[in-house]
Length: 296
Ligand SMILES: C[S@@+](CC[C@H](N)C(=O)[O-])C[C@H]1O[C@@H](n2cnc3c(N)ncnc32)[C@H](O)[C@@H]1O
Image 1 (cartoon, rainbow, N blue to C red):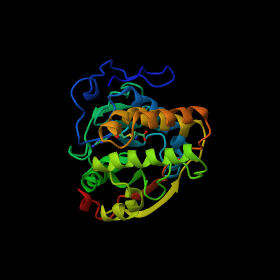
Image 2 (image 1 turned 90 degrees about the horizontal axis):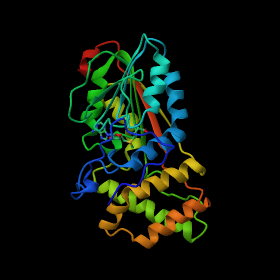
Image 3 (image 1 turned 180 degrees about the vertical axis):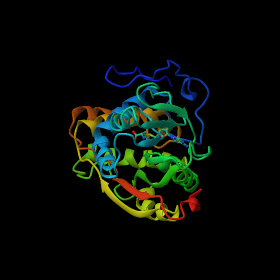
Image 4 (image 1 turned 90 degrees about the vertical axis):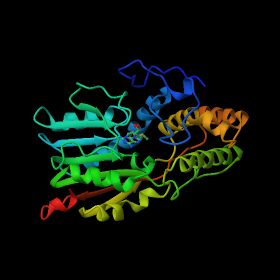
């Protein structure tokens, strides 16, 4: 399978290297399903930003990100959140953006970029960050407890951890208004994508566990909120990018066929599905100021 041409409206990778398993050898059976090596990843980052950056930035403001803050953006994917953080913290602050594949990020744009596996590598600059944030990352990471411990260890005493993850079991439908065959087909294909994610070790019920997981990681003042969009262009574009991204894996797994995928993509293009997403659960907690070394 060859990556589809990159549309002009999405971020381009600063490097031009697009060597992927999808171009040659067969794709790995394990690991992150929606890997950044494909052009569709850049489209997905654009539409995720459109759908969720407002929610995320609201939490940043509420948790006190300001000029001079030190922030670590984990599994950053695209550029919008590192850029927003860099604008908020200004020249006296510091933003570190990491990813297992950081190739969509643009170092030198007010933030530092590093390749980092949050489930395997130690915390960078432990005990120093005012805010550590990960959105739609941990759901894909098999060793989530270790990843959480790494992020908690990076916080200064009193610093905030903000984790945002989907709970696709809470609302598994692509079309909540399943009024016809196109909507039912969309729901069948959403189930198929969820099946692929589960086979890669994603926890489809992870979002709801976040408050407990943050408390178990030793954080205090823990709370959470959820949100999801219903309908609109960004939902349509995100769905089309996702389906194109995993088309080969869906076919290989025998979960659908070309005709069903093509009919679904045509229905998205027609703009009549009112597609929706799983709720994004945003949960936050603070490293205690008393006995903070318990998290090291
Ligand atoms: C669904 S994307 C979300 C990107 C971005 N956080 C957002 O909300 O738009 C998941 C991102 O997590 C990254 N990722 C997956 N596993 C990771 C790991 N173990 N450590 C660091 N990043 C990881 C992927 O490379 C990808 O960029």
